[in-house]
Image (cartoon, rainbow, N blue to C red; front, side, top):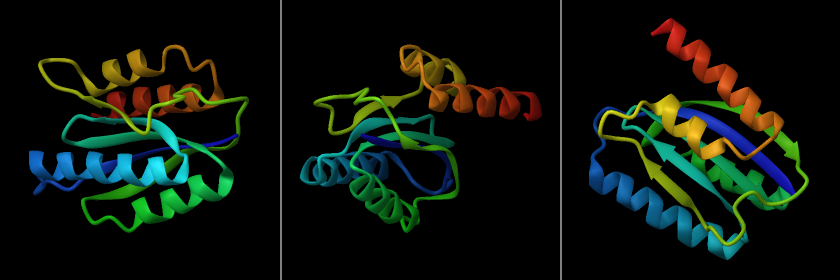
Length: 132
């Protein structure tokens, strides 16, 4: 099993219909390619955790990288992992709103990862929070 975790910045001109399209496209593609994972968005940032075979995850990430609805992709972690964290979830989704911060939503979503990807993301978010 292989995983890739990244964050990116949402283009300011996309709306709810774009977010809905992203989720529909991701679920269909991931199902076809046996990729599972998690997507968190707060309207400003995306955090995504992808898992599957290395070829499928890297092909998915290449496709994501060409998507103009976001920019400044930063890979937090990639490589082998012990097993799926999201079995049966073509794409779990968390839309952060209602006073919950992006970092709080991500921390809650990855609390049970117990992996270097979680640690890398937590470090990244804490640094971003300090810089804001």
